[in-house]
Length: 209
Length: 184
Image (cartoon, rainbow over all chains, first blue to last red):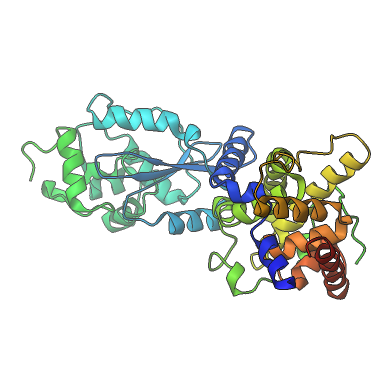
């Protein structure tokens, strides 16, 4: 008989048995409240794109990370937890502005992003390179050597290439606008096909190959 | 270890037992809070609904995880996260029971099902059992719920209710004995 009681107890009170999704809904309210009240340091959300589902993360300062679909969410979150803060919640509302801007960008209607950025995942040199990159206008492109020179780098194109390769906020910081000399496409964190796709979207590929 | 039950403060993370392999979510540091929340929301929800009923469980759940979020960065990476969050939940539930006892809160919606008439023998048995669970002294009730609803080992139940493992086993045993008398 005692076994029986233990089994009954394990099932939880009758109300527990009757409700499936209430814990999920309650957890969602925790995340939303944590983001809205500033108790979380980082909010993230999935964001639709022509490449598939991206994941974007923002701090109170601004957008800090965009991950391509093939990056596992768990490892992206783990890296953010370790390098910035583990107070990370999923809160789509915090990324509404980015979603709108990306949607307009992918539709060809937006040529510049207005959302604030958080540079804290990038070191001083990388930041100079990425700021130079962010200044390349829509439809334009520079070579790795040019970006390196403009970033005042004695370390040259290779160092600039490394900094661009670890761009934490691709698309919005347009590292796809940096090509190898002679207009050769060069590498891209999200894969060369996506680089070409973005440059074609921007009308930047005519006459260069 | 002198812990004030129901004190608003969160358990000192440094006093928590280290986690077993099951409680580890991420290698290295603390997991992102969202992963922690997703991993334990079900256990905490079931525990709270079973302890204070569905209405008060909603508030307790929010308070539990918001308190956890505030304290989260101070946790050691190898803390037993499940025991920790259920400790907080246990205290939030105790607050509710205490407020009810002093008349500050209505005595809840435990017997909300139709009063016996037309209910099946199974429902009647459930009502009797859970009515009896709610009649238990606070420590016995929590020990029972932490053990069976939240599936915590004895060592972690002791941490949660702030007693020795021996005392936790005793509370569990005494609670079960009382329930056996009701459910023949």
